[in-house]
Length: 266
Image (cartoon, rainbow, N blue to C red):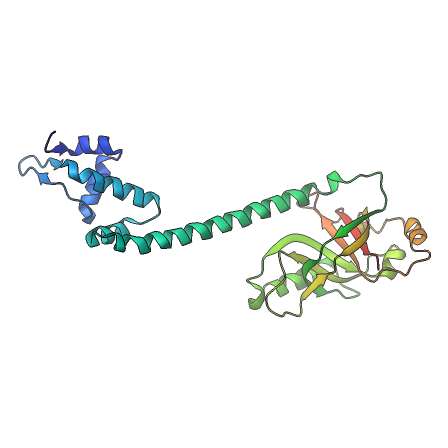
């Protein structure tokens, strides 16, 4: 077995570049066993190969070269374990963040394809819906749509609400009187939250779980048919919880957007 290996041979055997080995030397992690004073050629011994291999796998595990240098100077497993435990925690946090992102992407795919999956032959249909969490603002009689948007944006920008996670499902709570007169009369304007806040905020509201009667319409055009609604509620009390959820079919225009109107059946 050879005693010395050139920097090129060492790089080839270990799957690194000669520039990498020179960088290790420069920052003091690993120096060649021997450097020719005349030619400047660098030579490594076989017993240094496992050190290079260790540097590689520690980098793969997420440790920086400065961390690896400190660990190598200590030379013990006790010096390595805290860094590995820290990487384990960081990797798990990153994995949880990725799982959350995957769920968000799946939610938005469902959102943008929701109405296309509906049976258009059904004018009215029932659905059981779980409780939903909202941040909402009040709407006033002479509000323009822009007034509601700005009011909600200002509320969401409050410092205490920055930590909340939203999903882009906008909607309105509307009045029963307006609905049955084919008028768009919003009481509140809201956006979905991923989950219930862990602190009190007056802008939070929970939409109750329950059986909802639903229909699809272009809400802002005020053109839905009230005849079938009147017939359905002929012998029933008018619902007190009515929401209209926007479903974007166009990413730049919203006046012609489709809405699903949901009436909670008491």
